[in-house]
Length: 431
Image 1 (cartoon, rainbow, N blue to C red):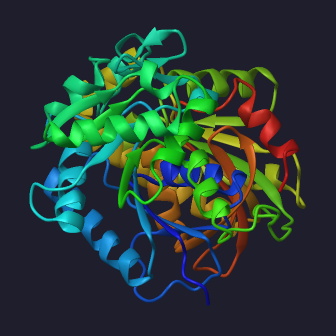
Image 2: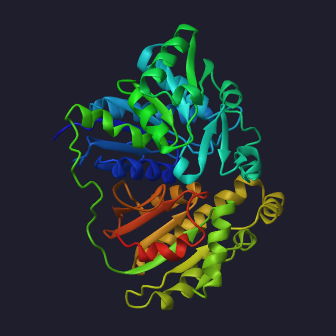
Image 3: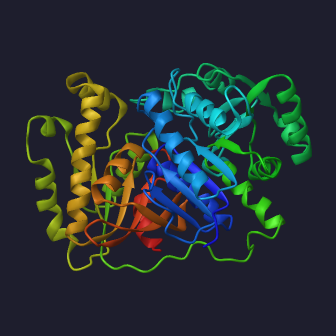
């Protein structure tokens, strides 16, 4: 079996599928693992993405998990390592992007050595970096709604400043005027920054053409850190050397049959809109109230009893189960239950509901929210996913086997991704 060319470490499960989706679209057969596998990779793949749930855990734990993933990827023989984080650079002054980047560079180059980039740009999903500042659509990151994130509120759009607070290394920048001149100019700027003692460079990007030029400049760099956008520019490097077939079909999935369901735990602005659109369509939806969970009610059982007759005999109309709420409602719940406690209760309940839905015949399942997706795939016992066709930018269908023996199509959606009608159109975009 040929060795994978690219090995990726993602800090949450939806981010992992987002990255894998872009690699598949660019021609790399890609497998996503849930956590670090125990043995060798059991699949033919050009790229492998190790999905961790490390975005919001203590920085020391995130570092330990990421280093374990690195060691496994090195054992598979990968040539380049990619640390993937959110396109909204979700983090706090303590991490976890900076500490993990430092640890990976230390492991690959020696303590305090090495050089890499940081670029969360994904223009197709309206994430751009200009003059070192991250924009979501037309507004700076800190005006996008991310300033209200319950776990990682982002109050500064200046990535050089955000990253410098987290890393031991000096942070520099590759400006758009350099990126616009192409891969050669970008490489020259990398060399100049290295000479200045810079270890991490924030790179501007406002369009896909920029990602392609940056990708070409990254050929041979041992470690890349980025959102998922940079991934579209990396496969060309192996295609240019004939080691990756430009013509191969990378997104084919085996067919499945059965009912459809959406489980939504994200409280992002985008997901709130998607839930409203689904409910307005008249399709069946059921809300999960954290206060009911805290009161000891059998919320999962109640939801599953409601859903079972709606699933029918392979019904095609999906059901929606959601804990999605507006920021003020979320803050009120957190004030009563505690931030961590509220989140964990909801995740456990939604994960139990998702498992129950699959046991009742759901074979096409969409999960919204990074933390929720992590809880769901763990509850289902999914260990590996084959990446299939894209539904919306950053969100592909995947095919996975559960520990109960069911083969399902599974889509893990980052809270901020997808058009307003995402939940409605997803089941028309069948893999």
